[in-house]
Length: 283
Image (cartoon, rainbow, N blue to C red; front, side, top):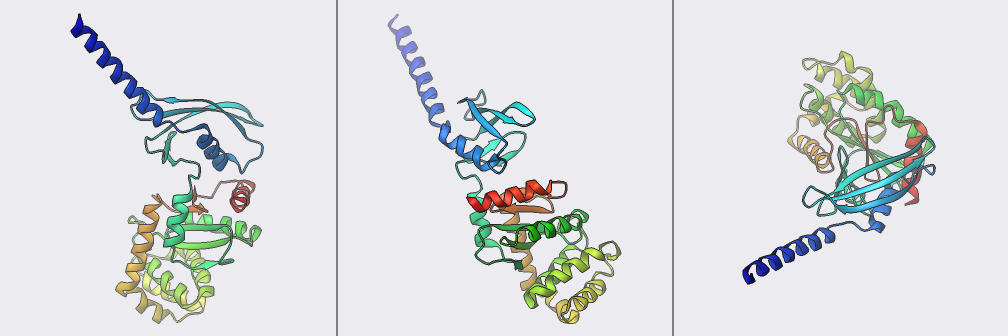
């Protein structure tokens, strides 16, 4: 009997310790509300109410259920927060916390090394990781240009992210890096020129085509070809790719607004993109 009581006490103590540990891993309502504000605050028509924050059946995860209300009606969404409180799982992995996009924003602020336009001390920095051989990046270019025209106070930074599957993307990135360091104005003309010629560029004629595009952009193409072949240029491209991987880039184009990942902007409504930039400026 005494042994049974001792075992019972031990089991209860273990359960209590597990419950206490689980509760300490739960995010607070304040943190969840801040996360929701950072995620949906750009749209004033969306409101939410926290339904529950509890331990998940999956050990270590916190289960958060939120009721969302929008002009389309009410819906319920559930996501799971990792024990360290840094990520949420909801069909995809996303940053979590009171300021979920701050880590990516800090990494980008420290690491960006690409050509930029717009005020250097802008309240909003838009960073695009792009591949000049990528058709989706070509499609995204006019969308970004339109957004920047509507948001003249935002800063835009172009980061090379050539994909391994593209056979002349690395070379184009090296040329682009050299053109950007030679002339910021020429860089944007070079990018547009490369997108315009994208379907005509091949692995075998890339040097010839890219040299001609650089000439047309206003810099000496032969010098850019020499620069593109240098190891230090290759190192700069690798640094840009490493930065993208650090903040979660897996494909192109990927766009960040003050650290918030948008992904491919093609298909995102103009008012939503503008709302995201305006909201970021207010933060």
